[in-house]
Amino acid sequence: MLSVTGLHAHYGRAHILADVALEVAAGEVLVLLGRNGAGKSTTLKAIMGLVPPSAGRVAFLGRDITGREPFEIARLGLGYVPEERRIFTELTVLENLEVGRRPAPAGARAWTPERLFELFPGLAPLRDRPAGRMSGGEQQMLTIARTLMGNPRLVLLDEPSEGLAPVVVSRMAAAIGVLKAEGLSILLSEQNLRFAEQVADRAAIIERGRIRWQGDMVALMRDAASRMKYLSI
Image (cartoon, rainbow, N blue to C red):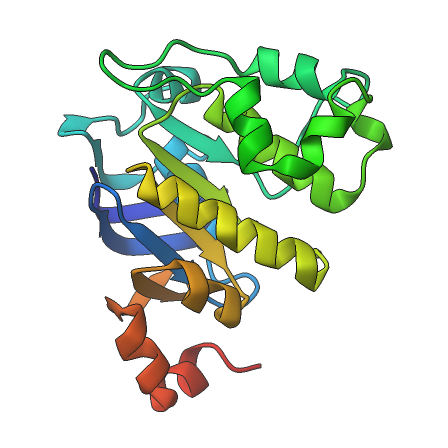
């Protein structure tokens, strides 16, 4: 579904990503773990074309998308949920969803507001509320729902559990489980190891812009030395 090889990225003269390589299979959840500033968000932005890669290759559904514009990448079926959420605060929940609407691929079941209210029941009674008058957890759900309205094949989720109450994090984990069951592929960046353990099939750990560890989530949870080395504060 998604293949990243030899990816490098810079912010000015700062070399942020160095030789990053990872793959996401169809229907798989891969979590990118790492400390603050390790390069997680930059990896997702480089894949999405928001940070131009300085070297390497990004392939999506077998097509080279390296260096393409973000809107072109989105139209190919790659969705992106930014850490900053970036909802339209003056628009209602339904209006935010309509902004993200795109047709589903041939033969695929389209996401609709009704289906999304089933996935995120907390949004249903808020459908006519301006998004700026919602809690952080509600806004996070809305951001994911808006991305799903574009009917993507794979979604990049940047720190979806950050700053949310434990009960909201549990709901988020349940929603990701439903999306996986629907066949959606997901690459998410996270610092919350417990959340990652709940939702991910595989993990990749990034440190100082380089992938230092990759493997099954079960294997990572058994590898206390690697967790201590790359994830402890």
